[in-house]
Image (cartoon, rainbow, N blue to C red; front, top):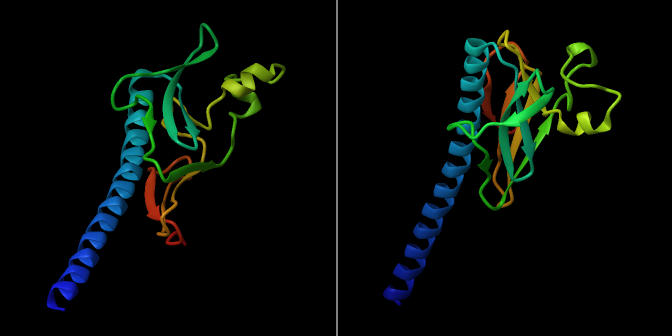
Length: 163
């Protein structure tokens, strides 16, 4: 009987440990995105370049706008290389899905250009399009939101904690 009780208790401790480890990895991944966006803003400002962020349900990546070719080129430089989200986490983004019509970054007469436009644009002035990126786990705990109003720093809050 004592062995059964100890086994049940050990199982509970092990499951708690692995659950909290998974939650910590989720938060760390969202923090990584927050930090990478702030670094991209600094790079954009220092190099006088326009950067963009593409968000998919299972990854995100950074791109730099090439004015001469009028294209967005995905960067593979660390820490801006494509980041694949861990299985069981869905990444969504809210906010303007394309740059403003007058920005000169998109030819609105071409649907191909619209498909290439990133979800978030970081301008050489240090400003960016406002956005919210939600990290939503499928294992029943609250996720995280990475967000910016476009002028202030990119921040991270637990989903539901933003007031």
